Length: 81
Image: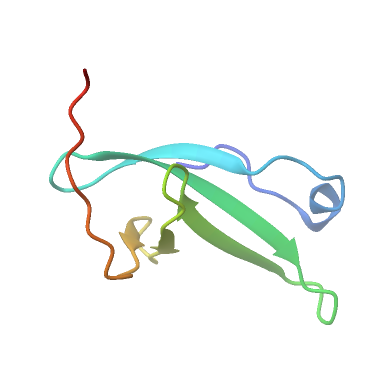
C-alpha cells in the first residue's frame, strides 16, 4: 500500500507524511496518514498511522492490514446535502 518508504535521511528533510487509501471489511474507505520519527538514541525509525480526517490512531498489522485503535469514538453517518 505504501509506494515509497522513508529512510532516516529523508526524514530529516521535512518531507510530508505519506497518505494512502485503505478499505475496511465493511467497504468503508479511509485515507491513512503515515508519520515517521527518527529516534535519536538508537537511530531507528518509528512509524505511526492515523486516519486523515478524524485523526484516529491506527495500528499496522504484520500481515499488511491495519486496525483502528478502539478510542470509544462513535462514528455516525453523514449524509451529503
